[in-house]
Length: 365
Image (cartoon, rainbow, N blue to C red; front, side):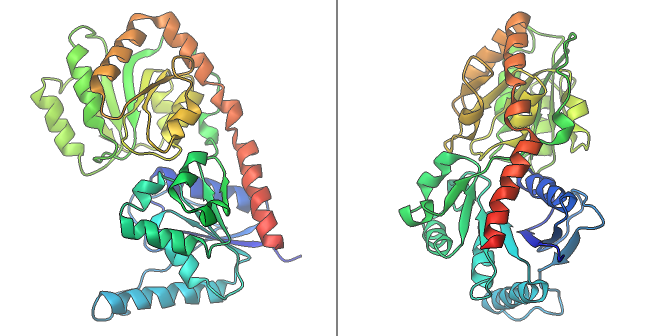
C-alpha cells in the first residue's frame, strides 16, 4: 500500500520552539509509517537533526535563479515553491509560522492538496502590523484549516478564520519525561530561549541583581543564542555579577543541564505555547512566567499552585517571587511536584496521536 505523504513547511530547522515541534512531529509521523518531506527555505548552522528517512527539500531561490528586484524574486520564490508541491504531490501540506503560512496557502491553490497552516506563536507577534493581519485573515480563509496552540489565539482572527481553527498543543519532548529530582537542588536559577528583545532576559538579570547579595550561593544561567547575548554579558559585568550570571549559549542536552535547578524563569513579552516552560514544569522545577497576552503560560500555570504568573516586564514582582521560593524550600518543592503533572497532561504519545488523528481526517478528505 502506498504510504501517505505529509509535506511540512518552515523557514529552517534552526533551534527554536516552533522548529522543534515540527521536527518532533515529523519524526513521529515517520515512525508511524508516513512518508515525510520537510521543505525549508534555507539551511542554518545551528539546526535540529532529522532521521535519514525524512527527505528535505529547499525552496529558496539560488544566486543563479535570482532576478532583478524584490517583485521579480518574490515571483521566482512563489514559482519554485509551487513547483515543489507539484513535483512532491503530498497528501497534505502542514505549514508552520508567519509568512510561511501565507506562502503555503498561495502556492498550493488549485492543486488539490489540503493545506493546513499552524500559528505557533502569539498571532499578534507573527502578524505584527495592520496590513499583515488583514492579509492573514484573507488568506487563512482559503486554507483548509488553521491550527493554534492556544485557544485564545483565535480571538486575533476574523469569524470566518475562527471557524477553521482547532487548538492542538505542543507535545512534550521525551527527554523531559523522567522522575522528578527529589534531592537538594542546585542553587541555580535558569532560563532557556533565544536571547533577543522579546525574551527580555534583562528582566531576570535585573531581578537577580537586586537580591544576589542576600543569596550568595545562587547563580543565574541563561541558555540560548541570540543578538543580545554579548550585551547581556556586559550588563551582568557592569552590575558586578560576572561570576554569578552565565550565558553559555545553546546546548543540546537542556534536560540534563536544568534537571536539578532550583527555579526556572520565562520572561518573554510574547509567547504562544512556550516549550521551555512546559519542559521545566515537567521536570518538577518551580517555574515563574510572564503572563503573555495570548494566554499560553496561563493555560499551563495555576498561579501559586503549580507555578507563578507575573506581568511582562515586572522585574520587582519577579524578585519577590524568587525570594519567596529561595526562602521556602518546602513551598518550592510543592510547587515543583504540582508542576510535574505536565508530564501526564502533555505526554507526547497523547498529543502526537491527537495531531495524527487530525491529519488523517484531512488526508481522507
